[in-house]
Image (cartoon, rainbow, N blue to C red; front, top):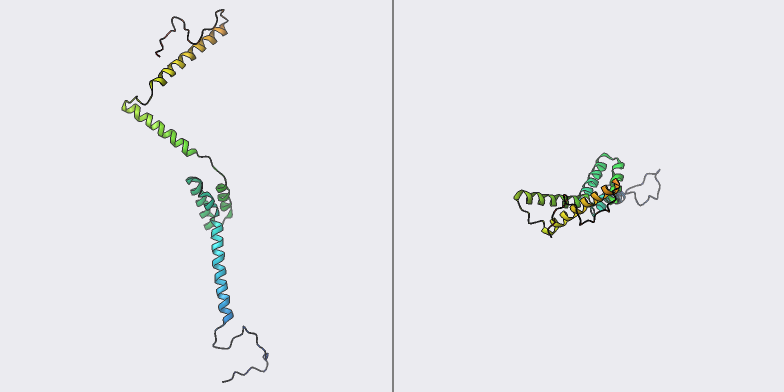
Length: 172
């Protein structure tokens, strides 16, 4: 059966027009290109959207979690200000408060456990004697300041010299 062309139709048809019952190649190619573009755009969008999280991944855990939450809020609410805040927070290096605070807390816990158990071996005797000697030196300096303020004619005492009633023995 020869397909006759309608007399009003053009005698030269473009290549993208298919005969009835045949596969429309242009529609298939357009569908594939559309699918690839949509998937590519989605991957690009999500890669760009996770940029602050990937930047914050190298930093502290708390900062990373805050940036991740801001990214999720921006994703689900479509409010881009959360993404911008997350990006800025990811780019800023926050100081590590947790590290030295945890070390201090651990040291205080060790001291508390040692005093609770009655252990005093952790503190060396030399440190105790040095603390007592520095206390004696501070007391002497306070006495000398008092002498200077009162205007006594006596010369200020040396750090090792003490009056009779303030004299205490320092064990070396």
